[in-house]
Each structure stands twice: as structure tokens, then as C-alpha cells.
Image 1 (spheres, rainbow, N blue to C red):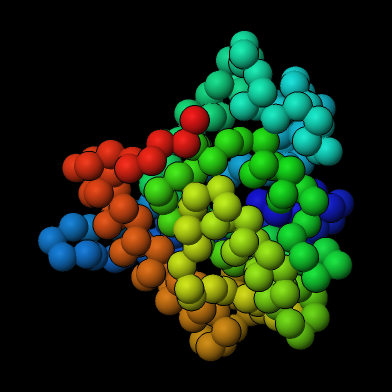
Image 2 (cartoon, one colour):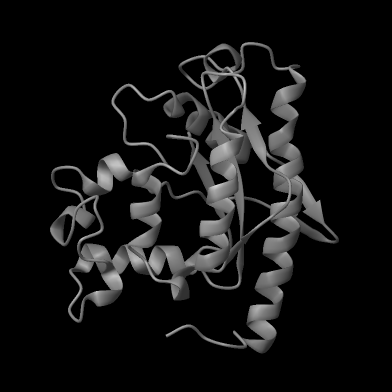
Length: 208
């Protein structure tokens, strides 16, 4: 989750994405694809009592890969990120780029956690561009971290009109919502292919 803003519009977008993943039925060859979702939320992780608040703060003062001795909850976060087969970034745009909360949250973990896996980008805005300008900078960040973004993206303009506060669409047939399914088609294909390659050959150039 890319926003830490009070009263964020992104809560309804995140709920919609989670609901879509929970009910999604997809196949790749003979395999059935399902999603087990873990949400990394900067409000929870950097807030009072949050796992990252034990070691750092939002300004990335002490990234996890600098720590010799990692607190148990931080170590568990690292293992959760490493265990994932793919990543979905749900984010607004601040000043037409990736929000600082997103850059800090993802940047607290080294590239070895994300390497050789795909990512998908979902952006939103209360205006007409749907966060697409931020998506360009998020693509660059994901590339550098090693979780390569698929080409299809989901950008939701006027998200407050597309989605209710509980994440349900105001009009399930709105064609703008079909962007998510197209992105997931690519993400799942890449996740399955990259997982097979990791298991068969390992990482060709492991990141320290």
C-alpha cells in the first residue's frame, strides 16, 4: 500500500483489489491459480507499535539490510517478502511521482527480497489521470528492486466515483475496472514462469 494519508481514498481501492483476488479464478495450462494476500501498510508498519517503527521511521533512517541483529518481527517481514511469488503495488501519486511512504516501505528491504519476481501496479486518483504519472516512477523503482513490473497497469481515475467506501464498484460494468483483470493475467503468467525458473535454476546473479 502506497499511501499513509489520513482518510485515504486508497482504502477502497485496496479493498477492491483484495476482493478481486479472493474471488478470482484463473488457470495456466493445467494449473489453477489462487492468491494468498499479505498487505504491507505503511500506517501499520511505521505507526505506534509497528514492526518497522522498532528500527526506523518513514524517512528510511535505518533500512533492514543495515541491521546485523534484526528484531523478530522485522525478520518475519523480510521472510514474508522473500516468500512472495509476486507483488502488487496499490498507490496514489504525490507531486506526480511515487509517494514517500511507498518508496520508504519498499526501500527498507533490499533487492534480494524482491529479485526475480514480477510486480503489478494499481494507481488511483480523485482526478482524471488515475495516478498514471506516478506509475511511471513506480515502474523504475520496481525495476531497480528486481521485481519487474508487467506492462499492463491499472489506473483508476475519479476513484471516489468508481468505488464505494467498502470497495465495491458503483458500476460493476464500468470498463475502466477491466484493467485489473488484464494486469493480473500478465502478472500470474510471469509469476508462474519465474517461480518455475527459480526452482529449476536458482537466481543467476544473487543479490547480496
